[in-house]
Image 1 (cartoon, helix red, strand yellow):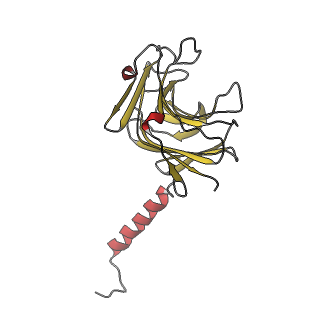
Image 2 (cartoon, rainbow, N blue to C red):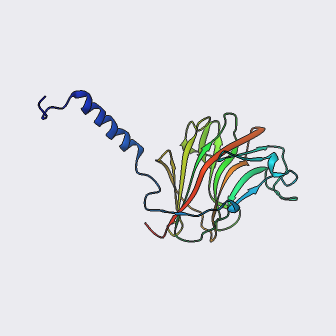
Amino acid sequence: MDKRFVPWFVILLVTLWTLCCHAAGADPTTGFTAVEVSEDRFKLHKPYDLPPEQRYELRDGVRRLWVYCDDKPFSAGSPTKPRAEILLNRTYSSGVWQFEGYGYVPAGTTGVSVMQVFGAAGPPRNTTLMLHVYGGRLVYYRDETKVVDGDICDRWFRLNVVHDVEASVLTVFVDGQQRLTVPGYGGHKHYFKFGVYTQTDPSHYMESRWRDVKVYTKTSY
């Protein structure tokens, strides 16, 4: 066969592969350095009157967190709503930081925050970013004009959140695709949280699962 002529199916395969790579986009972690996060830095926030095993499970590398809308807050007397969240105790105040994790939200879970970047300039806001689940959609706070993913439930998804502190910009990726870029809300101390934290119009039962959670950083772009 003349090597100048390539079979049509080979051309088709190469074209499809190129298109798929282009669609996937660049890896959000490129240029970042992984930060060591030992197990003791995964701090559980759960209803104060319950033992950890009633709202948190770590099995085969998967962290499952669940809460009921009528549970107690994480501390006695707290005005906050019920939660079962992991606080990644690796705080930062400058540079560029990134959260990465593979999440899973069972269908039926709604009215809940599943990931947040804690820290803001002051009341009434304590966070600089929150990702909520409403009706199977992953949204920025409860802003229906900023839908990060329209079909987030019953599947594993890769979530990357990049926080440039000096520029006060946050960028969210789902499955390697950039889905959202928003300004931050200031603050001098930040950290990442994930799990379930009750918001408005919640389901009675809320759950999310996480695996391969990592933290990355770099000093500048």
